[in-house]
Amino acid sequence: MTNIFRNASGNKGLTAEDKNKIKELNYENQEKLVDLFKKYPPIKANSKELNKAVDKAIKMFSEINMKKVDTIQNFILIQLRT
Picture 1 (spheres, rainbow, N blue to C red):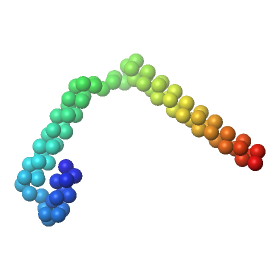
Picture 2 (spheres, rainbow, N blue to C red):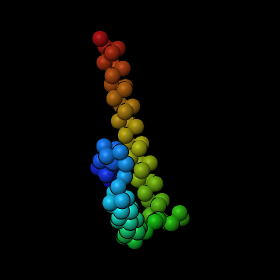
Picture 3 (cartoon, rainbow, N blue to C red):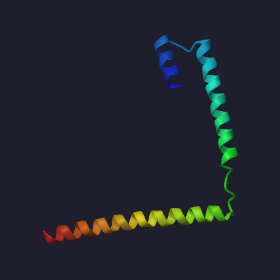
Protein backbone atom coordinates (compact mmCIF):
# COMPACT_ATOMS: atom_id res chain seq x y z
CA MET A 1 0.00 0.00 0.00
CA THR A 2 2.94 2.29 0.70
CA ASN A 3 4.00 1.97 -2.92
CA ILE A 4 0.55 3.05 -4.09
CA PHE A 5 0.74 6.28 -2.11
CA ARG A 6 4.37 6.83 -3.07
CA ASN A 7 3.44 6.53 -6.76
CA ALA A 8 0.38 8.72 -6.25
CA SER A 9 2.47 11.52 -4.80
CA GLY A 10 4.71 11.34 -7.86
CA ASN A 11 1.70 11.26 -10.18
CA LYS A 12 -0.08 14.05 -8.28
CA GLY A 13 -3.03 11.98 -7.16
CA LEU A 14 -4.61 8.56 -6.89
CA THR A 15 -5.90 6.97 -10.05
CA ALA A 16 -9.08 4.89 -10.20
CA GLU A 17 -6.85 1.82 -10.39
CA ASP A 18 -5.01 2.93 -7.22
CA LYS A 19 -8.31 3.38 -5.38
CA ASN A 20 -9.48 -0.09 -6.42
CA LYS A 21 -6.18 -1.62 -5.30
CA ILE A 22 -6.50 0.10 -1.90
CA LYS A 23 -10.03 -1.31 -1.51
CA GLU A 24 -8.78 -4.79 -2.41
CA LEU A 25 -5.93 -4.57 0.09
CA ASN A 26 -8.30 -3.37 2.82
CA TYR A 27 -10.65 -6.29 2.16
CA GLU A 28 -7.72 -8.71 2.23
CA ASN A 29 -6.54 -7.28 5.55
CA GLN A 30 -10.05 -7.55 7.00
CA GLU A 31 -10.27 -11.17 5.88
CA LYS A 32 -6.89 -11.89 7.46
CA LEU A 33 -8.05 -10.35 10.74
CA VAL A 34 -11.24 -12.42 10.72
CA ASP A 35 -9.21 -15.57 10.04
CA LEU A 36 -6.80 -14.64 12.82
CA PHE A 37 -9.59 -14.20 15.36
CA LYS A 38 -11.15 -17.49 14.26
CA LYS A 39 -7.81 -19.23 14.70
CA TYR A 40 -6.99 -17.54 18.03
CA PRO A 41 -10.20 -16.60 19.82
CA PRO A 42 -9.88 -13.91 22.49
CA ILE A 43 -9.19 -15.06 26.04
CA LYS A 44 -12.03 -14.56 28.49
CA ALA A 45 -11.24 -12.10 31.26
CA ASN A 46 -11.81 -14.63 34.03
CA SER A 47 -10.14 -17.59 32.37
CA LYS A 48 -7.29 -19.67 33.73
CA GLU A 49 -5.30 -19.02 30.55
CA LEU A 50 -5.36 -15.28 31.15
CA ASN A 51 -4.22 -15.71 34.74
CA LYS A 52 -1.39 -17.97 33.60
CA ALA A 53 -0.34 -15.48 30.93
CA VAL A 54 -0.37 -12.61 33.45
CA ASP A 55 1.64 -14.64 35.98
CA LYS A 56 4.16 -15.58 33.29
CA ALA A 57 4.50 -11.95 32.17
CA ILE A 58 5.00 -10.78 35.75
CA LYS A 59 7.64 -13.46 36.32
CA MET A 60 9.49 -12.52 33.12
CA PHE A 61 9.31 -8.83 34.03
CA SER A 62 10.63 -9.56 37.52
CA GLU A 63 13.52 -11.62 36.15
CA ILE A 64 14.47 -8.85 33.73
CA ASN A 65 14.36 -6.28 36.52
CA MET A 66 16.46 -8.48 38.81
CA LYS A 67 19.09 -8.78 36.07
CA LYS A 68 19.08 -5.00 35.72
CA VAL A 69 19.47 -4.58 39.48
CA ASP A 70 22.36 -7.07 39.53
CA THR A 71 24.03 -5.24 36.66
CA ILE A 72 23.64 -1.89 38.39
CA GLN A 73 24.95 -3.28 41.68
CA ASN A 74 27.96 -4.79 39.91
CA PHE A 75 28.62 -1.51 38.15
CA ILE A 76 28.50 0.39 41.46
CA LEU A 77 30.83 -2.11 43.12
CA ILE A 78 33.32 -1.83 40.26
CA GLN A 79 33.18 1.96 40.48
CA LEU A 80 33.74 1.86 44.24
CA ARG A 81 36.77 -0.42 43.85
CA THR A 82 38.51 1.89 41.40
